[in-house]
Amino acid sequence: MTHSPQEDGQTRDTPAEVDAAFRTQRRVALTYFIVFLVVVAAFPLLASTLDWWLDSRLIGELSPGFLTVAVGLYVVFAAIGIAAATLSSSVESQMLGAQGNQNSDGPDPYSSPGPS
Image (cartoon, rainbow, N blue to C red; front, top):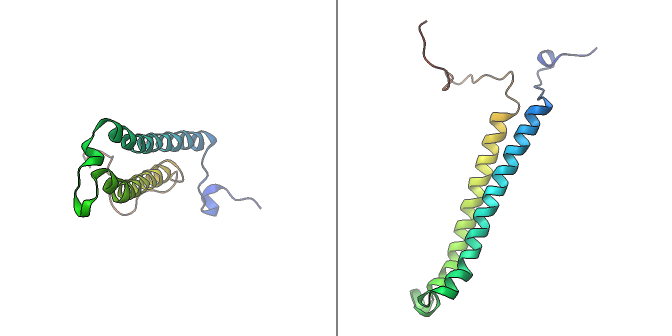
């Protein structure tokens, strides 16, 4: 015996919904990849154009360029990764699997309050 999507409790996404979610996820990934490339490309550019970037000394005789590469890149890469993962998860949860699932935690934030 076959069950309809409402009877077996599973949500079925249409091919158009899956395709739209895929295109959106691809756009998110490409955007964060471009941000990553810009950040990585900034360091050789700074080193070749600004003399103080490598010649001046900050903490313990370390240059701003070295400190940025040694510490700053890890922080920036972690922030980019967390932001991309959060946005991708949000996009997926909003675009897929929500056909029959209404937000039961509270009122719909996109519905306008009207006369009852």
